[in-house]
Image (cartoon, rainbow, N blue to C red; front, side):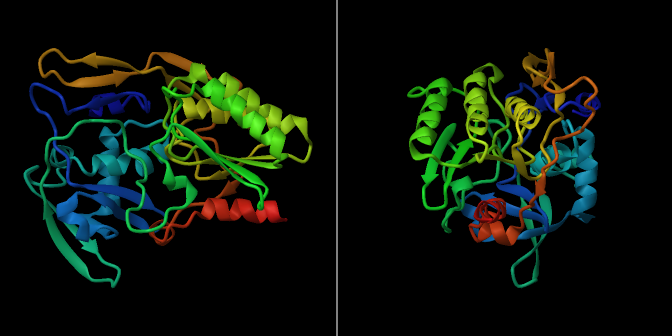
Length: 339
């Protein structure tokens, strides 16, 4: 994992779950790094009481130092992917923590947590076998009303029209077809809805989108560019974040280059020009699977050396906003629409 990480490419990584030897385990919690620290955002039923707790340290190592150490095995295109998106994922793998000398043994991991009242608690967790189903995104809240960006995170794409506020919210969570509706058909549907309703503002949410099949994008790209070009008063907003990666980043780069779209949120999880098209390999002795990229995607000019696409309007997410079901990015966009 350290060797692959030295390539400095977010599409290159080891998947140590379905191997003949040395399969890794995972803790029963999911971590997420907000602008006010690392928090537990998802657990299994046995540890629901830990939901919302802030993580101060793992074993006796402060959490920021742990994240720095984990960077040595972390696939990344840039620091957003390294420290914010995938870093917290690797923190939940006990074998990684042992291999980096953070814990003495992968059999038990001690966390120091802080509850809402500021009280410290030390808990012991153990890993369990798991299936790799892609890197996680921010989960839907179970006991709180969710803002739009969390309501349908398992759908590849969907939209909702807000006539009173004069905007269309369009969320693309994966660049992939569905059995009932191809992306091309969805793109045509969006164009027709906009034309009939005369909506002036379109919000494209790419925060949960870590990629897919980039060859499916042209119909949607054309529809979005046509929306901007058909009326000088139309405005396109694109919300991005640490998970905006791979094929989703190709769409972002095109809109950033070809339109005056207002980009809102965090810096993206990739570079405008990057390596992609990941393919699987299997190590013969251990049976460990991995992924390596094979193609260079030049989505911008050759001289574009940006490490990410930065937002015009930076908006980060706090733990309080998340657990309260709020969306600061949409709050900022609605203020612009009102003005």
